[in-house]
Length: 297
Image (cartoon, rainbow, N blue to C red; front, side, top):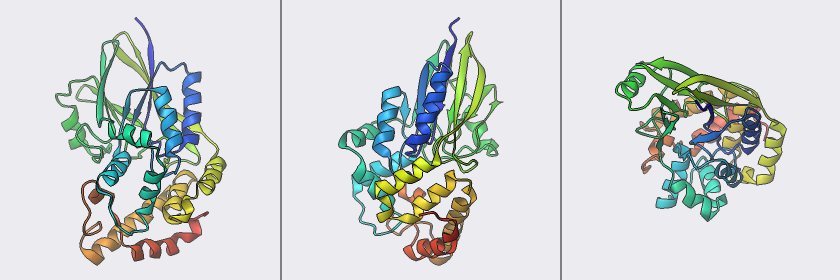
C-alpha cells in the first residue's frame, strides 16, 4: 500500500515567517499533501504574503473566523469608529482584490479521502467557523463524532496545544496554532498525518522554531502601528512567551464591557462581529495603559 504524509496547518494568522519554517520542516519530512484549515490571515499584518504561500502549496484550504470578519466587512462596510476595529480595516485595505475574492470562496469544512481513509477537516467545527471544540467539552466532541461519516475529525481555532485521541471510534485531532500560539516563545505548531494500509498509522505533533525578530521588524515596516498599537502588541505578546497577557487583557475587557453595557459588543454589531466582541474605546485604551509594561511597540 502507498504511504501518504499529510501536513495540516491551522491558525497562521498572517505569520508568514512561522509558515515558511513550518513548510521547510514539512518538506524535510517528505510531506505529500498540505491542508490549511482556516485563520490564514488577520492579526499579524502580512495577509497577501501569507495567502500567496498557502495558495502555492495547496488547493485544500478552509476559511476561519478571521477570514469571515473580512468577508462581512466587505459586505457591510461598517462605519464603526472603534480603535480595536482598525486592525480589520487595515487588513481589508491591504488585501489584493484577487486575495479577497479568493477567501470569499473558501468552504468552512472539507472531506478528503486518502487511500480509503476519510478525513473531515474544519476550522472551528463542521457547523461553524466560530464554534470551539475544546478538549474538555466532551459533550460537543461526542456529538460530532457519533455517526460521523469519516474516520477522523481534524480542526483548530481553539489555540490549545495540539492533541489527539480516539472518541467513539473516530480519531479526533486539534492541529494547534501555527502563527500565534500562546503556549510557546517563537514556535509554531502543525501536524503530520501518516496514512498507510487504509488507516492513519501515526500523528506527528510538530513544534518548529522561527525568528521572532523578523516578525518585529516586519510589523514596524507594515505601518499597522499607525492604526492601532494595542492589538498588535497583544499579538506580539502571544508569540513571545507572554500568552497570558493577551488572554487576561481580553478576559478583563469582556468583564468590564458587560458590567458597563450589559452586552459584549458594540450596539449595532451584526453577524460574526457579535462573536468578535468589539469593546468600547475607553475600555480598550484603559486596559492598554494597565498592560503597557508588557508591550514592545
